[in-house]
Length: 379
Ligand SMILES: NC(=O)C[C@H](N)C(=O)O
Image (cartoon, rainbow, N blue to C red):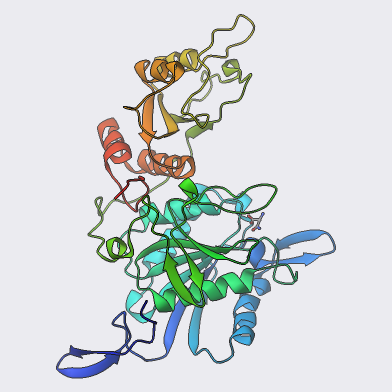
């Protein structure tokens, strides 16, 4: 792997300007930092953890103390200061607008600090709706505040800086150090929610995009991952010039034994669409019960009678071998969202219903458009 300070001369306006491997000049490097809150921007007092404006800026000071010889300038903004459990889709738009207003020619990359609770959803939202930004966007977080010795906020910040300085990959990435001290790099559309007991993240297929080792990025060559070359050669976004918006009216349901659909009554207000999660084998209950309404098929018919489309995810391959219950579900008209994580499927549905009017546009966007490797494909 070629180190980030690899020297290369390129000709610009007939003057030889020394640049690094990414074609960036060797002037003082600048990174834009967008603080949004979360534990990484919080302070602990007694038994309470809450966001604190000063804690966000403290991150930059602590990083400076951690790497005193590194000459990087940080420009900071704080459009939000919120625990991420309190985020709503409107806040993703605030972040997207902040990203769009940046003069990319001034910066090597962007770091967004965030809470861990809803990080996968924000990562998906930014990945899907911040297309065409030519520099890396790194999302970072921490399980503990900066003033807790267990906190990894400064380390994660440092890994994000290393990635930006070493790689010139456009896209949205999450860097989060796990309990083994490995700085795992995830693609923004493939991060699953953190485990509630170990507080660890994983990517779909347990195949993160790579890892930072000795300040360098090591790509994970798992068949499901795009290559670095593929990321470097990303073409223009498939969907362009759309004034993105996220709908708050998508209902998300998870199956569990005993889920009683009778409690979902659309007579007062109805969602624009439903995303019904599935058990891991692509199933949900189709059983008739005299005691309660246990069948997703009845729910599907109820939704259809209210003109509410029901999508199902995650599902690997609708054309492969399926359980009888899954066949029934598909025959009854549930729309499968194949090979996409349920977190990203939900955010993409919110984006589709917020941004497009026609049902055909929504379906095409959901089923045929891939924006940032959110659809798993073996290459
Ligand atoms: N570790 C964290 O950041 C958790 C916090 N509740 C948040 O998501 O903002």
